[in-house]
Image (cartoon, rainbow, N blue to C red; front, side, top):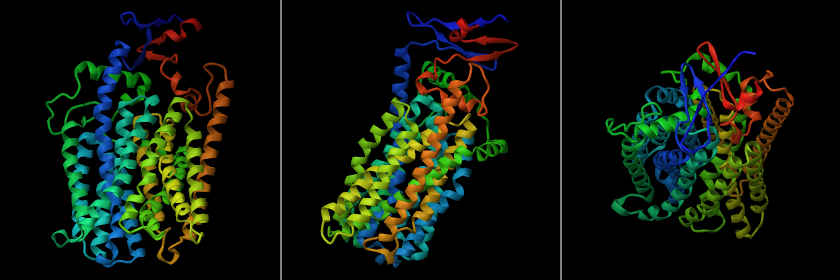
Length: 522
């Protein structure tokens, strides 16, 4: 048996920690628990509010047109419902066409610069939507909005994955998606007030909706430029590059703890190579997650667009329908955090996605049944609220589940772009689910949504069964045995709570270095 050197780090009166080594430089956990908590708290207070604000702005600008419908937007611009649906498809098409190129730019220049620029760009486009006056201008502005928004969501997700450990990811992803959820709900509530400005300056209410929400996004771009760290490697302000956001000690702690959790995050290149694309596209499990998102987001995006109109058809006043359509979206926020906590705390990735899908599917069953009632306005409205509560959060939970199968930052960046592309491809087909010949009860639309979600649920069950079988297979193998799934099987076999102290053998020059966790087994 060869001799092994064991390297450990003593931390005052703390327990000793194992060491992992990447290349020639040892990574030593040389800080106290209190220091790490303090640094992570500061990171949370900087990164999370800013990224969440950006997602909030994106959702305001993307979704405000759905609220404008209740203020005679279609009649004023001169378009039909089916033409409106085509405009929504153009938004999603613009995102899909430029999603991966946008993410490649972000990977090269850093999230601080790129996400800040994007916020300014889609804020400007959103503002200029106020001056559209025909079908052509509607199509062009929706397409431009899609192009300028593309890459923002996967860019935000990738940024989170570089700053946090795998165990911390699900909760932060859900906080990030809080911006989306809060934006959906707030947009409808704000629209109720802003749309009453019809006649101010001789303009319709929807004119002021676009101007005010787009202007808010542009102002938020300055916050991004001042406070969002440029990148994991260069955590400086984009507008004030000489201002340090974190102290050198905090940077050391934040970087090292992430690399101890996943050394592959230190392998960053200036660009993403062709090999990374081949690796991602040949990874069949990624395509299952892609289908899950495709099935969840098509019905959800379509329903969110027409929720105020559907509520109005129950007999509620047109503008008040925006406020009523916000209720379920506000309730979904604490519910989604509850699902995220279960996913994180109990390592129930697949279970929470399947549960969310089941509840979402049940919502469309309710809508299909209740809209047939001659009266029963309360029951019809309950169906809308239920669908809104459970319609969104399966997507971010699926993203976290997917990210755990990624082996390095390149694959993770591309996977984030792929999954968000799936969400926006869903928007392309979803935009045509609710059509004028199916209103006001939308029997066909609700039936189609039920079928799509049933297929998505089947995909989630299949993926969960795959994880369960691999865990079982790995658990039966002797320590150190190879598996057909390589490193990925090991990731699935170990719950997040066991990732950090897991014994690791790594190469350091010509001499192996073994963590303290393996000392007794050699």
